[in-house]
Length: 147
Image 1 (tube, one colour):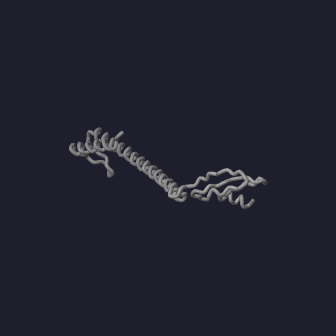
Image 2: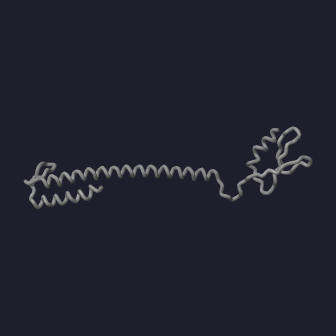
Image 3: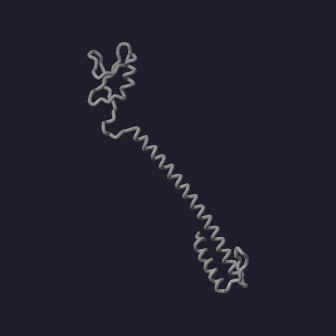
């Protein structure tokens, strides 16, 4: 009985090139497998599925390939997340620069007395300097205020 169980467990792992395997049940109800049929009992032929030699089936190799694909996809997700974060930061910086440029243009346009606010205080601009700064503000608006 133990031999039959052992044979049944090992049978799927055996690679038989061209030999046939037979299965039959004896008088006691025990299932037996063998490479040759018994002389006095009707036995059925069992088809064993084996992997052909050179088929490229390698479970360890396939597992490593799967792990690599998973790692690659995780790296791709992390890269996309970092790119989205960077794009969001660039967008926020552009929005800030756009608002600053618009305020500068508004201040330069509204001033009749040509006073211009700087970090150090107010500066009186010549008309030529005022026009230059207005042009710079317009260029900054074009650059940073894209919709």
